[in-house]
Amino acid sequence: MYKIVYSRKETDGIQSIEDVHVYPHQFRLKKDAVHYVRKIIQNIYREEGYATELIAKGGLSCLKTEISPMGNRIEREFTIEVKKV
Image 1 (cartoon, helix red, strand yellow):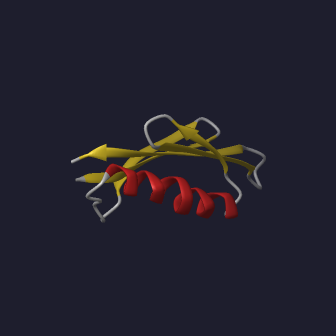
Image 2 (tube, rainbow, N blue to C red):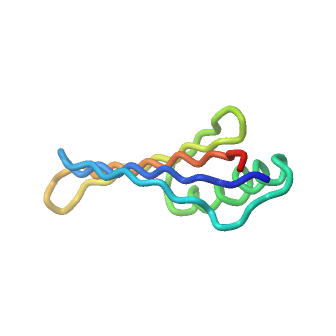
Image 3 (spheres, rainbow, N blue to C red):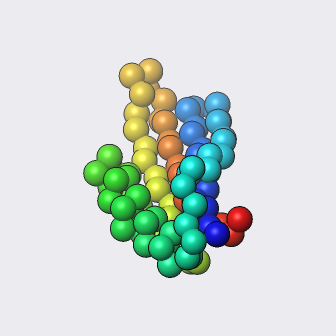
């Protein structure tokens, strides 16, 4: 069985937040999990304005930067990986 793990890192000026989430659905085959990440999740993040890059072994890296109203740069980075249970 395989699961999808999201690692989120958000930086706002000098403040940084990191957390990890696990997608609730498990996949029997790795190829199904990789397909879900590379086709479906990648398209969702692209529609939201993230730059996406494929990572070896079925992963995905998503990055988005914005300027806050206070003038600080907000950087959001997601790393999405397929891991064996």
